[in-house]
Image (cartoon, rainbow, N blue to C red; front, top):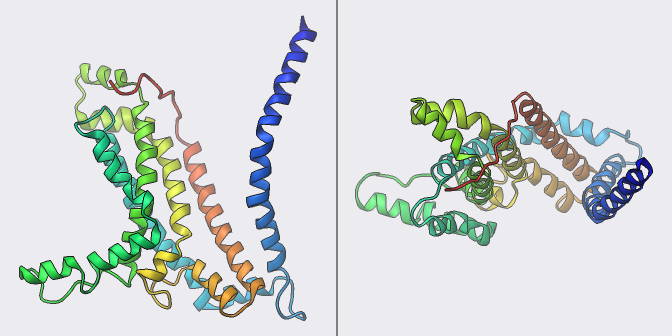
Length: 294
């Protein structure tokens, strides 16, 4: 009997390995190998007589370069917080279904199909110096001078918000909708109000999914490039680390230095993910799945 179980387990392990093999191969080919090759290139400086780590030393000795890390964080972090909070508010309100839910959901996730360039052009047309919003506010006399909402950090944050909100909203809506409604009903029967139910019952169950959504949005926001160019100031206040890498690669034609900047960018994202994962591990993860919407 034990031998039969052992053979059956071995067959299941083999099937699992065969099923995972294409995914593992894809991850290796599209992520692991390019990342390792990037590290290798970054250790081959353009000047042959320079040290192995000269590109990294040059980056952190140049304030114009290493300040791009701070700039990128200052764009990614507020965007991530805003996206997660708004997505949580809407997803929590729609967790048990509302009127015209499908229509509202379609409108909220529509930016996914538009693309970054189209969104940026729309932001310039609506929020720009001569955009519709400024023209309307000037016409009704609410402002005397046009608002500066583009070609700065505000414009980039607008663009990043519109790009990342649909993913975060759909993720949280699916996660929150799967929480057993009987938990809320039980708390309500015991006299808990809406705020108490959210704070003491729902939020501890939502928190693990919220942390994962935060991590994904932050990583996507930290990699900002087209938005920082189109609706920001790529040579000024919105010169992100990805722009620094692009300039070294395609303007200075120094792929080694550009690879070093890209590696530093990846390490910053990895460090942020490690912190987020450590925070999530400190949370109590309970069973949340129930019958969902009723």
